[in-house]
Length: 141
Image (cartoon, one colour):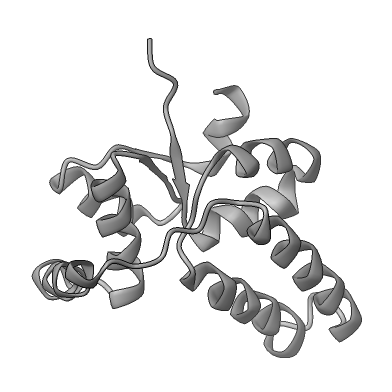
């Protein structure tokens, strides 16, 4: 039986690191993401520190350093030229952001399970034949 390979969206990376940092590292190192995750994770920390005031700026900086270190050790494939058109097409067809569509295109192209906590993204993935898994289910996988 072939071991499933995972593509993590930024939300699942953030949740895994926040909720189960020890287990998250092993799971994330086995998976991939897309380059957009760098920016989305930075934005999530900006939101947590500036808008929601859940963490300090210093905590956000430390968390960003950790997240970038993890991303640097994950496989992050470069986008392929033909993927841009497919991404835009899926974004329009399913009323998704270009960002979310990029995760779908890469998961489908690579034949990987998309790890996401976004219900709309998971539902669309199913319509495209992309298997999904919520990040909390990974702890039992």
